Length: 195
Image (tube, rainbow, N blue to C red; front, side, top):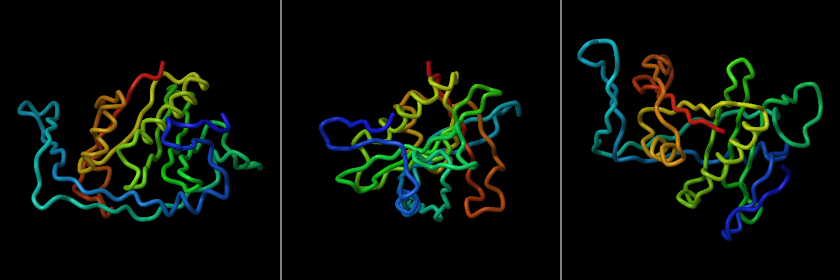
């Protein structure tokens, strides 16, 4: 897939190129939410309860910039290009407004959504869903059985978006973010079949 156009909104989707790295790194992935997901051990101690609770004041979260290498970028050549990784981008008028970085693992036939972000001014337009569908297409090409991702318990807007995209909860990690600026948050794992 080289270029695909989105709905009549003028968004162009394509594989990322090395020259997209700066715009990907600079994309604003912050969010504000009036609710978060609370995780508690079940009464019998053999499970967890997950419930959405309001927070006042709303939570604002900005992620630190990440370094995105050239793995999976279309047009990248050389020994470091990973055939099982892709980065898809969304462009509005030539400006990068979203991306999804994914990687396939053959041993469990899973495509992991490593990162998916849409700039705040472009959210709610179906760009995240369109990027996810490109990831699902790549997953099917690779023979994956499911898509998998991890999301913080405080990122309720993303959890709701993923549920609309067909993802369901499949696990959690209560200690994944320990020792990081996100300490105290819980990692929620979600998956969906891709066939």
